[in-house]
Image (cartoon, rainbow, N blue to C red):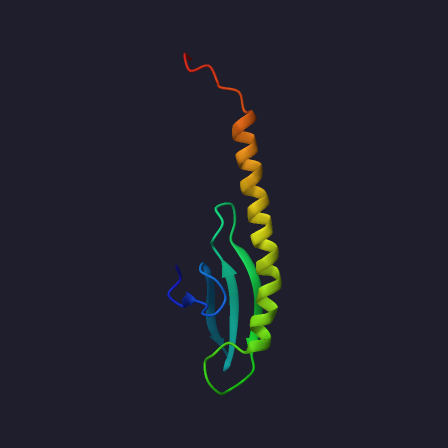
Amino acid sequence: MPENAKPLKGIAPGVLEIVSDFRGDTFRAVYTVKFPKAVYVLHVFQKKSKRGIATPGHEMKLVEKPLAQVVELGKAEQEEFRLNRKITPNRDKSR
């Protein structure tokens, strides 16, 4: 995990935030590593408030929708994997 990444509190386990400063501005990228096939970037934004380090509430709301979509995608992938395991014929192990 990058040294500037940390868990994003108040969303879900496995959701992380990278904070980066550039020319006096702060930028944040929110992503999840909960799924084995990919890292999903949920939201990227410039933090405009100069007060505090907390992620603004309106930015947190913008993370929730793509996270819900990724969770549903993850469920579909797990189901597909489960179904494929059931119908995959056993391979000849004598080779």
